[in-house]
Length: 313
Image (cartoon, rainbow, N blue to C red; front, side):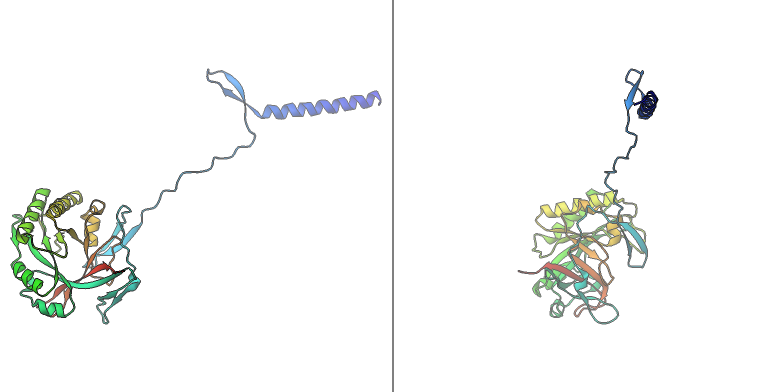
């Protein structure tokens, strides 16, 4: 190899070293150490973002529903509350314009028909009611006036209806129309119910019924959802302690605005909804599906109900 060739190879090698040193210097950054002085810290020339491992925030599911007057509401469905197990494709309706529930059988649940009445229905021929196929009834035992005084009253027809319906072989439950504004008043209402029942046997629950008064102002108009829930618990616990099954009368407006259902999971729901299918996503045992039924033995219009029952294996 000639001296000229050696010098050429040496120059090429030096150039490669300078390129390598330059690239190495580019991969070093000046970073302050823990004492505030600068130190060289090697960094990767290419960086990638850390993967996003955070769980997606679920969007609350909402439900559009309508009250008995056709007013539209939007409700956030409470995931803490048990949902009903029914499939409404198995619900059959009576022919005609009203589309009232006729039968239901999904292989697990079926229904039976009943009525609920008060003194507004007058004297009832319970034998005719039974022969027409109605198996159970909720009787209004009493009520509290929704005026300022909030007077407690026993329904004028309760004792008569109770005896005659029992003699006709109708399974019975009772309800109390509440206007309690606090827990003490709710317990007072439960005391009246227990006195009037006087240890009588019931096949169906004792129902707490704190309805919203649609057509007038009421003493409960300013009661909060939290307080309604406390009142309901106070009534139900007293009824339960006496050996009866408590239950709650409700509709979707009440479930949205009046009850924290997550605190009331222990009690059956008697749900009112006059549409062809219940709008509620939540559990229910009884469904009041009409307030204008025609029932043999009952003068005038009557409330109609079904009970969802487990089929016998």
